[in-house]
Image (cartoon, rainbow, N blue to C red):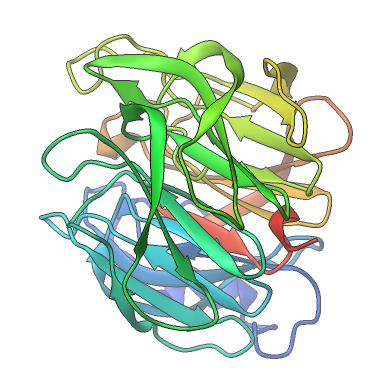
Length: 331
């Protein structure tokens, strides 16, 4: 499939996948929201992807505004995205019904305008943590996915950070990595999703990292974290992108274990999960927006090993959000 790094249109982008639609597909579906293309333009696209079989990605609809650095989570029927950057940070929460294509609609608001958050969910509750709202913070907030309304306070992370990553089982949420006071961290925290309260220490990643963003997922038992940047001074010149894939057993505690490698170093990716398959999409080989990639590759979560090629996105892009109707928080 071609890599459309220049001028593109939805017609061109999705023409190779026109033989199917999200409305009539019965397998696990992933959704990719917004992001930034290789020329640095923010996107308002919502794409749906067959996770467990080949077939490409198709246009599903549009987000309320073009944005990047948002975060995504879902129940088995509704997908939600929160915050992001439209040129300035936003507090908007929006949602789609995954079974029928269409544009996102308003859900409510975060406590403040913020980008670079992490999020996770089970079938009932979505939890959004930290982000950048003028300062790096430790705030955790939540929404009830099946309703609409503003986010409510949940508690606090063990340390304030931005651009970390998160995943969950049906009962426990995991927050990992991020940037703290100008340096990357290897901290892993956990919460009990159905309650409220501050996060507790879980263990550590093998290296300090940030900018994993939505490059994560779980099958309900094992949580997996892909790529990111381990440079010690975020947004200050040199990068140290990683190809690392590592995992934790969510309902225990302890340090992360090596899983394998992505095909190359990448940060600012998105990932979607269907059952035991985690599909990593897009991202960048550096923080430079001209280095976005259209790569899609997958792993089998219950095994270990390097990622395998899946196909290509319609265009190269980075800093988008991902979620699915089959992730491990749904049981």
